[in-house]
Amino acid sequence: MARILVFGNSGSGKSTLAAKLNEESGMAHLDLDTLAWLPGKPPQRRPLAESENLIRDFTQDNESWVIEGCYADLLQLAASEADEAVFLDIPVQHCAENAKGRPFEPHKYSSEAAQNRNLAMLIKWIEDYPHRDDCCSQPAHRNFLDAFQGRKSVLTSLQEVSRFRTA
Image 1 (tube, rainbow, N blue to C red):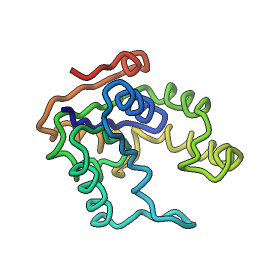
Image 2 (image 1 turned 45 degrees about the vertical axis):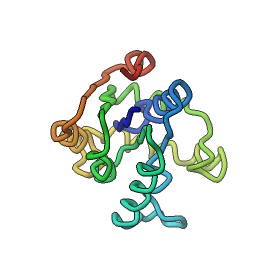
Image 3 (image 1 turned 180 degrees about the horizontal axis):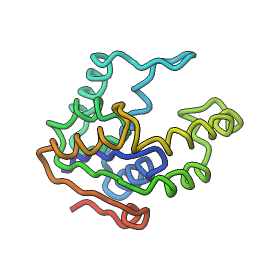
Image 4 (image 1 turned 180 degrees about the vertical axis):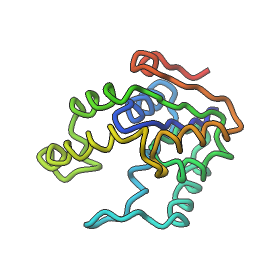
């Protein structure tokens, strides 16, 4: 049984790593993007209490899991249940290149054209990662990792992410 939190900048490989852990180990996979936002436009964050209920349901329904996302506030809601935290501290320029090459994400966008229209904003978001002060920033991720009580890993290259295996 493993319970792993994977976090980092957009484009760092969080979803790819979580999908690999799911495929190789059968761990249930929760992408926090799927519950962080309310449906509709303009985008609006789901109330924290609602997100907490959804995260609790997921962790109680699955013995072995990986939760991934960039939301330190949501990751904190699962931290006491997790065995390991994996911080993908990938250089910003590599995250931006990854984002430019990512396949269509139908769970996030209504069409590939919509995803492509959002790319410039996403690249700016990625580039601002070290300087922001929100729950999705590099400082928030470092603070989360520092406070985490379980096993910790910091992966600093896309090669390390691709080679990562659970213990």
